[in-house]
Length: 71
Image (cartoon, rainbow, N blue to C red; front, side, top):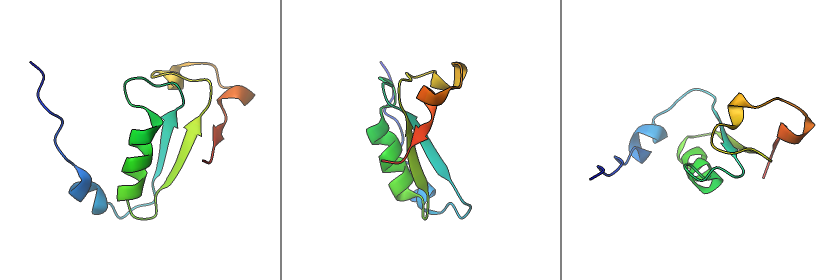
């Protein structure tokens, strides 16, 4: 049985450094909706989505298709 993920929203709200949350468009493990929620809890954070990328999108070749976009 898996343990539930702890709620870290209160801790995220205490982050006081500039942050950018990046999500991958086709990530089935951590979809962009979760990245957007995380960015919302961090004061002043920005949120971007990398198109044509799955969960391990950061391992792929960087080209014009993998450029982040602002939602």
